[in-house]
Image 1 (cartoon, rainbow, N blue to C red):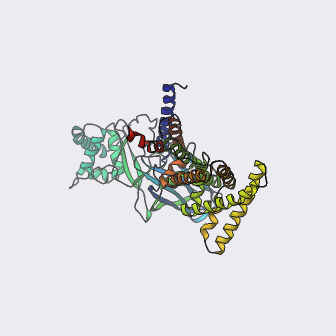
Image 2: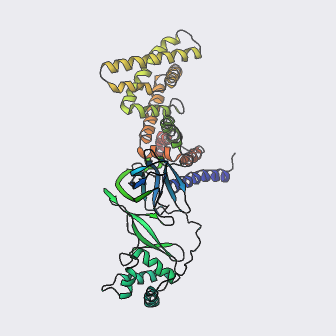
Length: 501
C-alpha cells in the first residue's frame, strides 16, 4: 500500500505547483484571472515632417523607454518609398527611416499602442549612480548662480529637495533679478538641471507626452529628472515641482535627441492619440513574445480544438466526484464527459433530445442485429453506419422543418454513440430495462452537471489560459481516488437501518 505521507506530499506539490505557475504567468505576462477584464489602451501616432533637399535622407525617431505604468505593443511604420527598421540605441530603442533621394515636404508615420498597466514595474536596470559635472558660467551668470544656490542649499536636505527649493525661487512672483537674468538665457527645463549639476546633483532634461483622448498635432514637453540616490524622480519645472501626473508617457530620457534628420530641414514631430478599452486577453495574445507554454502560440485552428480539449479534465473531475463520492452509476466511465462536450456545441435541451432520439432508435435496430448472431466487431461497425444514417436523416428533417438546432446533432461523437447503444443493449439483455434506465439516466445527469460547469466563462477562461491549473485538478482526482468510505447514495439507502437501531 502506498505510504500516506509521500502520497500527501505529491498531492500538495501538484496543487501548489499549479497555483504558483498560474500566479507567475499572471504577474509576468499580464494574463487576467477573469474573462472580460478590460484595459485602457492608447493608440499613439507620431507624425514626422521635414523638407528634403534632394540628397539621401536618414531619419531617426527615439521611441519611449520601458517605464512603470505602461506596456507597449509592437509598432508599425508607414512611410511610402522609405526603408524602415527598429534598432537599439545607447539607452533607448529608435526607429530609422532611409531613402536614396527625396525632395520637398516629406511625411513619415509611426504608430504603436501603449497599454495602461498601473501595477507594472520594469525590472531594476543595472544603472550606476550618475555623476554631476560642474559647469563653467560666464559673468554675470556665474554670480547669479552662486547667489541662487547660496539661498536654496541651506533650505534643502538632498538633491530632490534642493530642486524643489530652486523651483520655488524660479516661480516666485515678483521674479528675482538673478532668476530673471538666467531665464533670459535658458528656459526652466534647461536651467534647473544646470543649477543642480553645479551643486553636485545629477539631473537631466527629459521629454514626455501628455496623453489626452482625441488630441491631434500635440508636441512633447520638457520635464526634469533628479537623481535621489536610488533612482530618477520627475519634476515639472513649469509648476512648483509637482511630480509625475497621470497619463504622462516619458518619451526621451537620454541622448540623442527625440528626432534627428540628415538630408532635410525644418523637421518636427507631432503626435495624435486616442484612448480605447480593449480585452486584456486580446492584448496578451497580441504581444510579440508569447507567454511560456501559451496555447496562443498554436495556429488558430488548433486553438479552437484545444479550447474543448482543455475542458476534459474538468468533466473528468465531475465524473470522479459523482461516481466515487455520490455513487451515481453511469454507462461507461467517461462517456458523460464526451456527452458534455457535445452539449457545449448543441446546447443542453437540443443535445438531450438528439441523444435520446439516436440511442432509442439505435436500440430498436440493435435488437434486430442480435437475432443475426453477429460478432462484436461486426455489430459495432454496423451500429456506426446506422448511427451515421440516423444523424443524417435527423439533420435533413430538422433543416426541412426549419429546426436549425437539429443540425448540431453532428457534434456527437459517432463511435461513442455506437458503443453506447451496444453497451445498453447488452445491459438490457443481462440486467433488464431498469438497469438501462439507471445507468443511462445517471450518464445524462452527470453529463448535464459537467456541461453546466464546463460552459461557465470563468471555467473556460481558466482552463485555456492557465493550463497549469490542471495540476490542481489532477491532485483532487488522485485525492478522491483514495476514498473508500460510504457514498451519498449509500447513506440514503441505509438510513432506514439507523432508525431501526
